[in-house]
Length: 59
Image (cartoon, rainbow, N blue to C red; front, side, top):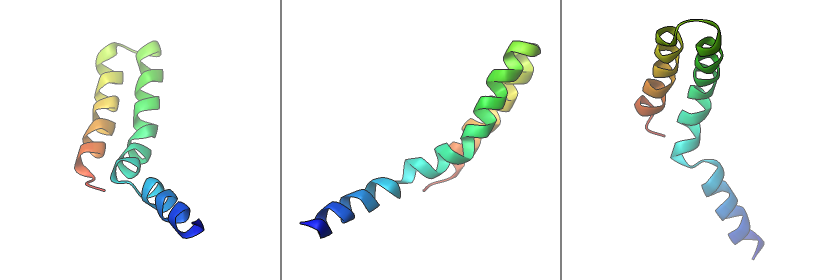
């Protein structure tokens, strides 16, 4: 039973979506902060870099 639980946890932890999200998170946060301080074009560009990184990383 414990082997099944550990297997499920490992599958969730190493799911492909999480790696791209972790890499993209700093860019998305920085873009959101820049949107409040600078024109929206600057913040949206930085957020776009995060989205591109999330899309480019297949795992």
